[in-house]
Image 1 (cartoon, rainbow, N blue to C red):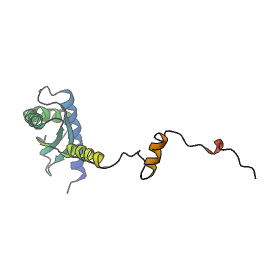
Image 2 (cartoon, one colour; image 1 turned 30 degrees about the horizontal axis):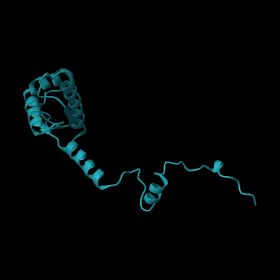
Image 3 (cartoon, rainbow, N blue to C red; image 1 turned 90 degrees about the horizontal axis):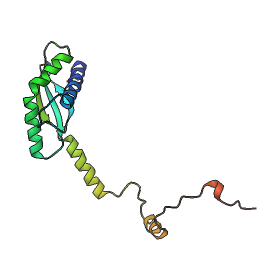
Image 4 (spheres, helix red, strand yellow; image 1 turned 135 degrees about the vertical axis):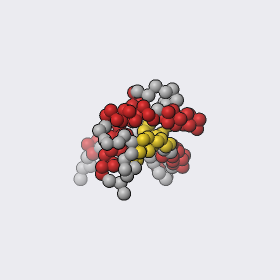
Length: 147
């Protein structure tokens, strides 16, 4: 069970690590890296940083090696900015959730019709009318019928 204290510490570590990766890490292997989350251990002495890396398999492996070699630097940044009894030891893990969601969206786009496309028989009628680009007339534009 994750406590509120662990969640707050994890969020603070996520903020410091993501900003340091973005602005201070000079390792050329660490590029296109997004920190997606941090999990703190119960004793708060170690943290697992989940990262997403855009690119192919080799780029992801290189980025993880670069992050592992930058772990000491990132831990020093955490120690400078967050006051805790222990500075957590960082380990990095690849998060495949972002890539999976992109793949799911791509598959759904192939299978499902576009959201703005009309359904059923209206498609053939609209194709015959020229695509249905004509706006519908409002209530003020219809001639009044006389009784």
